[in-house]
Image 1 (tube, rainbow, N blue to C red):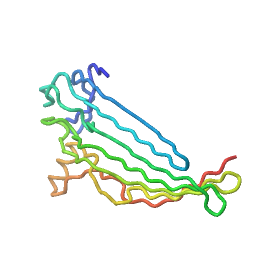
Image 2: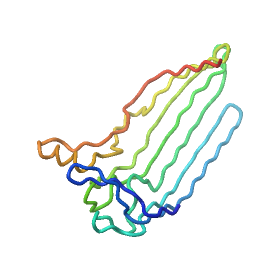
Image 3: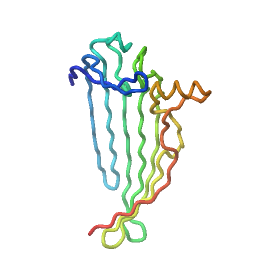
Image 4: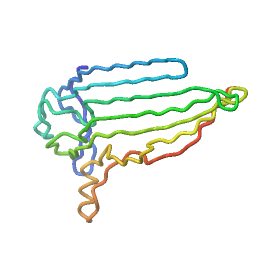
Length: 188
C-alpha cells in the first residue's frame, strides 16, 4: 500500500492539528488456513507487515524509514475447536491463541506524541458451548484466560506533560483483563 501525504494528528499549545507528514509504504504478506477432520476444526492465520515512512518530517521529528505507530511486524492466530454431543445436544469446546510482536506507540523523536516501546504479547481465549432446541446457542467464554496485562496504547504528549507536572504516573492502555462471559444466540 502506498500512502501519499500521510496525515497525523499533532498537538501544539493544547490544540490538535492535522498535518501532512510525507509518504509511507506498507508491504506485507497474509496467510490463512483451515483444516477440518471429523469433529476437529483447526485454523490459523498470520501476517508479516513492514509499515514505514518513506520520507521524514524534521519539524515533527519523524525520520525517513521509521516504522508506523502500532504496526506489529508479526501477528498470528491459532485456533482449535472440537465439536461433539453433550446430553444429546451438539456442543463444542475451543481455544484460540493470539500473538503479536512488539510495536511502537509513536515515532522516535516525534515532537508531539511520545514513542513508547510496546512489548509483544500472547493471549489465550477459551470457549465452550451447546446448541439447544430451536437452534438456541449458549456459549461460555473466557477471554485473556492467563490474565496478561500488556500495554497496547499510550496517551498523547499533552496529557502526559500535564500528569507529569502534577507528579502523576505515565498512562497507557492495557489489554482487557481476564473476562468470563456468556453469550446466547436465539434465531428468529
